[in-house]
Image (tube, rainbow, N blue to C red):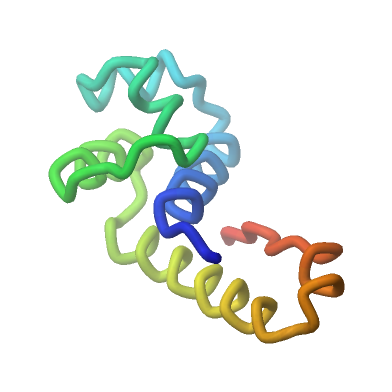
Length: 98
């Protein structure tokens, strides 16, 4: 089963790493606790629309871009889920931003 919050977290982490930013830097810019951002990135917390917007602003990436990236990953994950379960377990959905 695809968990949307995990795809959102993976996408946010990918954007953060590509920008060369630390969790601490994003936390300061977004005015959100470092621990909470870490939980979002690990897919343990689902961000509200307001939090997602704040994180996008801190990462200097549009909300539309993040949602588009998540949508692509969701589509790939759903396609993988239609494979034979043993085959799907061997594959991973890469988070490719760029």
